[in-house]
Length: 267
Image 1 (tube, one colour):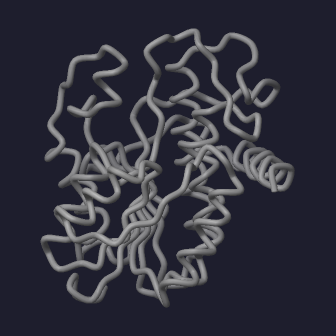
Image 2: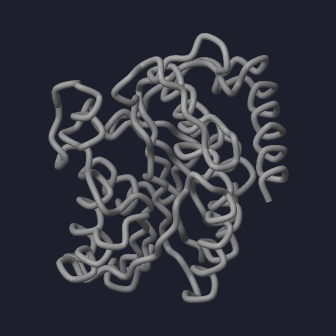
């Protein structure tokens, strides 16, 4: 990897929580940080307080994801690291099912599908050696392909867990696709119930600090010893095994097909 002071790193969901921590830490190390968010006021504060460059989009709408990719491609000649961090939590009401602007179950849309599409659109900008880091979770739930949008038996926890497993399945597939290119792809559970707005809104008391999860994520994004490591899932800084569905090539193929169909329909 290039020295940090020569790197350009894009972080989605960078105006709060883990994303904000990462943006501040990396900017403090001289990185050119491109911070994504959807709130203009929060982005302005991030520019002023951390010196980050900012881009704005609502990842709950795939047309905005597409526009975001086009804007980044026009503004930058390369990316060294892409951190897909933006996400929607369990929700304050476990039974309240929500949909994105495209009619897609909201957590699947924001936590997984937006990153899936954005990453594919930005691949030409990733200049090897480069890294993609998907911020997933230990809270994983298998995808029921007969009801992937969870119109039956919905709970916020299940929706969140399904979206996070989808991220890991995508990580494994993309790592294989890019093997030998100099671009690595890994996923991690940064820490359990970090002290974030997302966790507090769900009524679940924090169990970990932002620093704990942030340092694990920074390690995966920047550590020299991980230069050739790809296609793995980490619990903090320890290699871990995701839900068994992630190891099923047929399930991953069904997820790819579903994802491409949803993106094509929305665009």
